[in-house]
Amino acid sequence: MYSVITTIQTPTPSVLTLVERLGEVQAKLIAVGDKKGPASFDVPRTKFFSIHDQRELALNLAGSLPVGHYARKNLGYLVAFGEGANSIYETDDDNAPNAAWRPRALETLVRKVAPRKWVNVYRMFSSENIWPRGFPLELISDAATYHEDPSATELGLVDCPIQQGLANVAPDVDAVWRLTMDREFDFSDGPSRWLPPGSWCPFNSQTTWWWPVAYPLMYLPSYCSFRMTDIWRSFVAQRCLWEMGYGMVFHAAEADQQRNVHNLLRDFEDEISGYLQNQKIVNALEAVSLKSNPAEAGNNLRVCYEALVRLGVIPSKELALIDHWLEDVALVLKLREADRKPALAAKAAAVGA
Image (cartoon, rainbow, N blue to C red; front, side, top):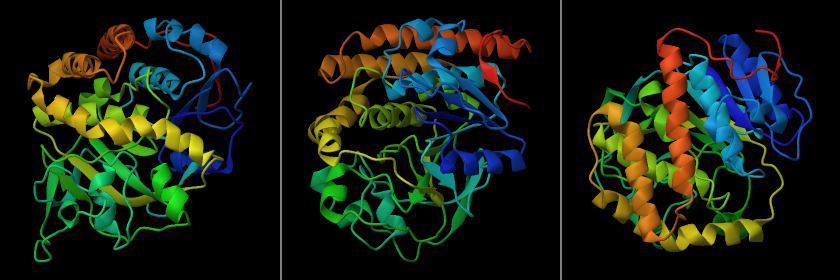
């Protein structure tokens, strides 16, 4: 198991907690820096890639990703693929595992949510008015998005190659919630929820589990705002999951976010494209024709982004990066299948296994 973060800071208390918990299960951390740094990242069981180290990687994407963008995290995913990760836990440098955190399995015990177009999963773990970043504002008061039949308590096992955990203290909400209701917030415990194919709920990149069949879907777009890159990725990933017959799983809070400093009005500005277009995006994705073979996940990803380019929400130059991503995914997975470790990181700073 590997964990992947991106950071411009020296190791934070949240990262130190993460590394400690990873050590308990013999997992490793990959940390991806950016033009602001840091110059080094001296923590155990961690491979750190500075912006210079990233340019030394034998990856097409390394030289084409824009700097100063969260999407440089894509390089960390690729390194983890190449090193044989059988699962990836992605998070951020301000999220620390809490007492409920544990390594997840592809097969997980869930309560199945009745089908509907949009599901506000946060309200299934709270009676208070709260919604995930990326959820349509016009639906935040719609009880149909979160109502559950109180008699439907049966649990069952499902396979799900993408699973999202919630975060306490500072949940991943949008700027509207923070500007109007911001405070420390903890979710209730409860069984994990499974959303069937056809039911949308945005998920983020703060405490998210991935398995190999979904690895090609981890791609974070570069030519959109920082506040939308993981949200729009989540819509594309869900659409591709459905085609393979999978739903989406959300777990009760498994991390505490000690949120990095944000300018809330700037966050609001960066989220406007989502407030205005998220419904259009999912409608466009529902209309695309995809292939159900899991081996087509990468091609399905590109088809989805082509639809977003036609919609005008993503510029066409994103497609060149997606092509580099898919080439790199094919390269590292081929090397992995051949049981050979790629020489991706000749100059990367690596600290003890």
